Length: 377
Image (cartoon, rainbow, N blue to C red; front, side, top):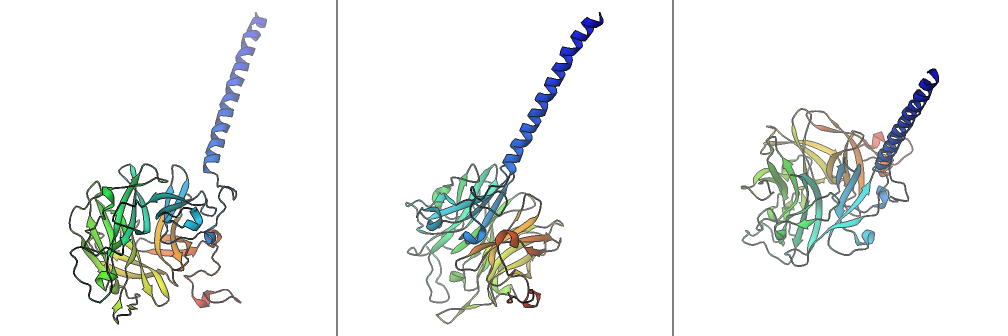
């Protein structure tokens, strides 16, 4: 009897051990799969660093599902080998190593536009991914528009919409590529803002070429991101005390609005990042709605980054840090990354992430802050 008992228990023991081993292997395999999915790409897979990457008006989507950063910018044929007018994307797992870019959107030859593909932004809305980008055609006059105050050319320019099922595209035009804002207005740099009630808005810059003193404006949108009412003026560029006018060949002075992005702080304050020109070139500035509503009124809070840096945008890194990317300098630009802090009432630059962007002279410091023996920033 004891012998029979031992024979029965021994196989049961082996079976239990086998199940435990299978389970352990499964857990290890699962963990390995997750580790592989989240692991940074090697330099062989992603050979580029930010100093190697031409870009202007950068926009980063941090896709949690794929643990991938998508950096969108205007197509550069030298980088993609593709001369089409459109938008390209770099990808990274760690914000330090980036893949060579590829085109995710090209402008069809049978629409009104033949230039631009500026300021791409990609937003998730109603389960799909929407690309906002600015196109233009210098040969097409603005239909029904009043003549500008100074003798300078105006022409069709506006933000169009394209859609895809995945952040990496490909993107196809919505509404045959017609701009969201009426064609009689020369506009650019449209961004999506969703207010506290879940209603979408297009916030954009109304061009200095048409306005003289450029403006920021907001247009309510429908659920399919079509115009749903008249635009509202938020502020003029000249309202920024740090903004400096740009003297034109015709003798007048103009004020530029560029690159809006909206951000809701941890205390519910509504902020706007935007760019114009200051004492030392392009500047990244900050404004705040006094009411917490997109309609404002808006007050100017000063600058975030100066010295020819701008068109910034905020995103959250996978490690939880709030980050901002800007381009610098304005011509032959590269991406520069900053760690940010949400102070409730405003945003503050914590530091430039030089370990990621390769910058040796952080631009938010003054000359007196520069290390001994180095040139001032």
